[in-house]
Image (cartoon, rainbow, N blue to C red; front, side, top):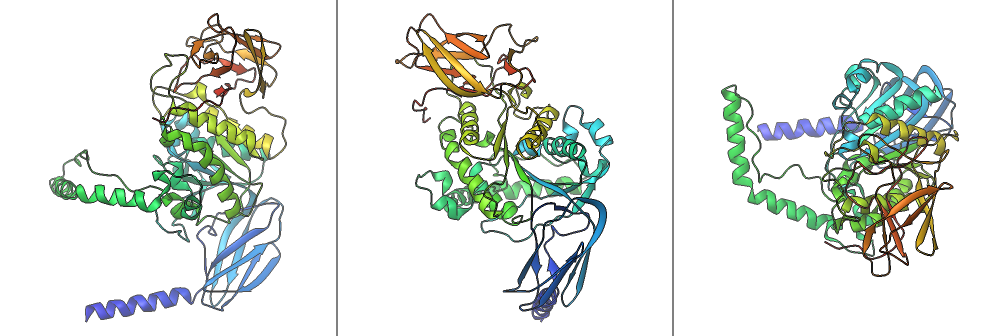
Amino acid sequence: MKKLLLSACLLWHSASVWANVLPHNLFSDNMVLQRGTEVPIWGWADVGEKVTVSFAGQSLTTSAVNGKWMVKLKPMKENATPQDLVIKGNNSVTVKNVLIGEVWVCSGQSNMEWALFKTIGGEEAIANSTNDLLRIFSVPHSTKMKPDSNINSKWTPADPKSTKYISAVGYYFLSKLQKELNVPVGFINVSYGGTMIEAWISKDVLDKLPYKDRTLDADSMKADYDAKYAKARPLIEAYQKAKDSAKLLKLPTPPLPAGIPGDYKGTTTIYNGEIAPLAPYAVKGIAWYQGESNAYPGKANIYGKLLPVMIDLWRKDWNRKDLPFIIIQLSGDKALQANPVENSGKAVVREAQLMTVLKTPNTALVTTSDCGELDVHYHQKRPVGERVCNAALSLVYGKPVEYTGPLYKSMKLEGNKAIIEFTHLGSGLTIKTDSARPASLYGFAIAGSDKKFYWANAIIENNKVVVSAPEVSTPVSVRYAWADFSFKWNLFNKEGHPASSFRTDEWELPSK
């Protein structure tokens, strides 16, 4: 009898929800709407229910089809004066304190997610973060095997409480952008540590790719996880008993034993749970910082194919074929470079990020090698966020500011010398010298047709780099910074941005 009553209550509750107009959670108090473009507003209502959306002198009416409705407000100018957005159907919903300005999505894995309070200078930034013109919408972790429709979150103005745990890179980027543009800024934070790029792409797209890799198969990857979880079940149950006992005795929670799998965040799950529900909320652009979980020798080789696929997918989701993407290049960690070139997954991912930007319109690359430490979670996030801001100012807002380091353009051979040209010279190439870096260029390697690389002599001449080595009489390839990490890489432009790693050859990369 209790089960019957519960079922009846659930049915009544469900019917009452769908009989009322309900906006997506993105349309909540304190939100920022994107200026200068059509603004979709959507949600749910009873089938056929008429819904009217009123905001800033506009009033649009539609009917719910299959329980969902959407209207598109005409482009609006920025406005820092709070306004109400009213949605009326069988009931009325008023969204308060709405501003109009610029909205950006900051997405990726742990270095994008890395909290402001954990960074150098973070505590001071948090203390000074109160800014009603910067609004934050933080997407909680949500992994789904099917696309979700809503997000359990809400907007909040920036203040020490809301910024403490927010993405440091995102905060430094968008707090600076708000001051530079002097308009309201919306910050949508959607990042999840330890995730492969395959997790951020839809199953439909992955299934249609002409190349195959087990990590692209969402069903197989989930089956692998389920098998691992089932095998660990006795260990999981024992750990739960240990936690319950510790709680009862008021003791610290015991550490998680090895062998227990973490939360599943595999192929396509983050796209389904966190990206699909966001689109097509009107945004200005995307800042993307991910790749560490793909940066392993062999595994990294497919990254250059997947990054453009993901960009294309998201642009289609937002119905913006020119949606700006700012890609933050991986810094370094692990051991210092010992050989002229290494079998480096990090270098392969960096190359994929560089080549994607060179070949994909309306993208920008931010270089970060000077910020890294012997820890994947380095603490210098402010320079990265500020470079992302400069990239946005240049790429999107037309400001004459340099935001990245020298990027490989071409190679010309003259006898035993290779002459390398770059873009993003800024006001000129330079060698950055400090306690960690030598006075001469470091990190260049050169090879002939035998594909054997040697450390190279490299000098700057006329804003080009001339590379040679006594062991190579006829150069064929030059590589720079082709390794997981070194503090010594020192080719910069005079604006203080480090050069991207690169290679001039297209030789097959190691598969393991």
